Structures are given as C-alpha cells and as structure tokens.
Image (tube, rainbow, N blue to C red):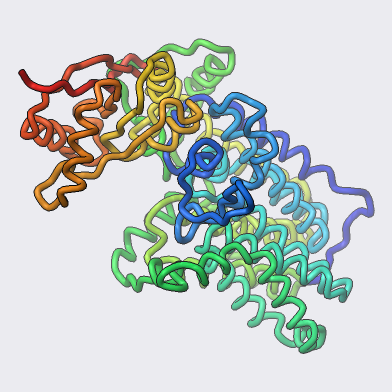
Length: 539
C-alpha cells in the first residue's frame, strides 16, 4: 500500500466524525435496560465470585469472564468504576468513546495510506454506520475493544512497513495479544488479516522480517495475551479456551449470510434491541425525541441503508482501478474480510449481529479506497465523491433515526427492558437478605446497578429436581425457607427460559411452600415486565 498524495496538515476529520459518533451514542444511552452480557465485565467490582482470577495478597485480580472472554474491559474501567454511581451512562459511554477513538485511528490510517479524500470518506461512513453505533454503545458482544485493537494494529503495521522499525510491529503484536485476551474469537479476524497480508505483501514482508524480528514479535504477542495464556495453562483440562469453543459447523450458511447482509444494511437489530410494535405507544417528550419523530414524519420508515448499493458500486470499480495504487488495499479488505467470515461461520459463529460486525471496518476501508481513488480519475470527481458520501451518510442516519424513533414510540425489546431500573430501585429499598433470580439475564445488571446489595443468587433450572443430592436438596429447602429472600422472575410471556416460572412454582409446592406476591415492575411504556415474591411454608 503506497501513500497517495495528501496534505501535510494533520487530518481533523476523524476527530469531527468521532464527536458526531459520541453525540449519536449519547442519544441512545438511556433507552434500553442494561443487559446481562454488556454488564458482566463490571460484576467483579461488586462480587467475590470471578470466572477466573489470580490472588495477589488479599486481592483477587480477574483475568477471564468466560472461557473465551477476558477481563481487559474490567481493567480499563477499574480507575473510575467506584467514583460514579453505576448506571447506563457509566457502563455505555466509555464504550462509545472507544468507538470514537476507532474512527479517529481509521481516519489516520486512511489518510496515511490513501490520502485525505479516502480518510474523509471512511470516517463519515463508519461514523454514521447504525450497526457500528449500536453494537458499540451497548457492547454486549463485546466488540468495542475488538474494533479499536484491530484498527490500531493495522495502523501500526503500516507504520512498520514505512519506517522499518521492529518496535512498530512489536506494538501491533501486543495489541493483537490484547485482542485475543479481550475475546478469543479475534482468531477470526486475525486469520483473515494474516492470510490477506501474506498473500498480497509476502515479498515485501519477507525483505523486512528477520528471524530475530520474528522472535521479538512473538514475544510481544505473548506479552499482550499473557492473561489468556496463564488461564489456559492453569485450567483443568489445559487449553480450555480451544477445547470448549472449537466446533465445526457447516450448516445454516444461508441464515448466516442473511445475518451478514442485515448487519451491512443496518436492519439487523430491529425487533431485537427495540420493539417493532407497541400496544402502548409513547409520545415524544424531550427535544431530541420530538426531533426524531419529526424527521421520521418526513422520511417514513427507513429500516435499510444504501450500503448494499455502495458495495456493488465498489466491486464494479475494481477492474477500472486495477492498475492504480489502491488495488492491493481493495484486495486486502475483500480477502481479509472474506477469509475471516468463512472462518467465523465454519467455527460456529456468524449467526448474530455482534459476530458479523467484527468484520468492521474492513468494508469501509474497501469503499473509502475505491470511491476516493475513482474520484481522482473523473471530471468533477471531488463533487461526485462528496455527493455520494452525503447520500450514503444520510441513508445511514435515517436508519439510525428509525431505531431512535422506535425506542421513543415502542420501547426496548426482550432482554433489554428498561424495567430493570425500576426493579433495581425497588430491591434497594428492601431489607432482603438476597435477590434470588429465576430466569437468565438479571444477575449482572442487578449486581452492577445495586453494587450487589442485596446480593444476587441464581438458582438451577430446573430447581429442586429429583436428580439432586441430599446436600443440594437441603440447600434448596433452606433457600425456600429464607423469609427475607426476595425472588425475582419475568412476567408471563417475557420469560427467556420458557416455562421456568411454572417449574419453580411446582417444585416449591411439592416442597410445601406457596408463593406470596410482592411487587410488579413496569417498563417506561407501562408494560409489566418483572415481578417479585416470597415463599412461605404452607400451613
């Protein structure tokens, strides 16, 4: 990749697009309730239990959240998590800032490699991408650090290719190691990047790399990923990250391709994070909500953007740009993204938006390089490029506004219910000995929002079953007998684990207990979503 002609002045477009991204993220922060996966990283601050931690004196330092998800995000939040009251802004805005930093880095990368036009194009398209915005803001993947670390690593590799200093490559290796620790599925993107880089730049890389350099880079990679390495050597059995997450899945190709398509066109989160309909539609209240409704009245429903058309246009341009300096970049983005996605789907991933979006910003790299270079070879190219980018950004923003409009009118969906805030507040006002959770998806949000007071406890599903040992049965009876324990469940029709409420009630009745209702908690649209109760011994 050779640098195109560009101004020597610093590129500020990335910062401007990053600020736009932060403003858009702020609009969404308070709508859906905290979700289990997006909150899990913060629970080690408030609970003794950790998936995997190491002991330093009296302190247990968390290393892993799951067998393939590390505690990097936990460490990054550590300096300030105790300074502010836990809530949606504290959990979500740092992720938005990480996304903004990714945009800034992406702009710097494009400016260095292909010039100012490409940098503006890429930053605007990425900064207005609805799925990138929402998956970063709510970061249940988690994906925010994945994007940042990958983009930064690519940027550092470009610096290494220009300056021939192994320190840049070693720094990139450290970031890749951190990305593996953050989430081991980084292997998808890493494989695609290495394959594409080796295919296209093998001769150039071979001239710059020595055996000593390779050892230095390998050591740097291990430094970044050392928490993951420690976990896999201490786990029983060893290398559990690979053992428990390695699958070969050759089915559902069509469904996964459709998910990739819906991620790219912006529609992938409708019905998942925000409801498509409402039995109790709400009127706008704040100026931002009123503006969203006004924009929607002009645009109508806009559930897809124009990215599919843009991608088709970029592919059509490849033959015309084949002899230009952007050819390698176009091929790199396509090959790296294609290999990563194939690896993703055959290893069991790709079935959800937060998997497919890990390919970002490679598609935006492709479009930015193709459109910017094409504009250099036609009359009025700068104007044509500006018009194209404005059109694509406007289509992106229309979809983003559709999400905001549906949050305002219909509310959130499924596990994202904002009734979690009323539930957490209600539990804080009690003297409960513990909050016993019946269904999935409540443990982390309540532990974070209430600083684990009252402490949360998950019960087995099914509860008090016939296969239990005598010790387990006694523990269940003791839990049912705890008159200060408050049990929490989703209301009928909102269960994640279908039938879990009835199974619990049947088990309690068989053990001689009956349910005593306490409170019902509604979401912001007045829909009952959570309910609390106690068990009392039947007389």
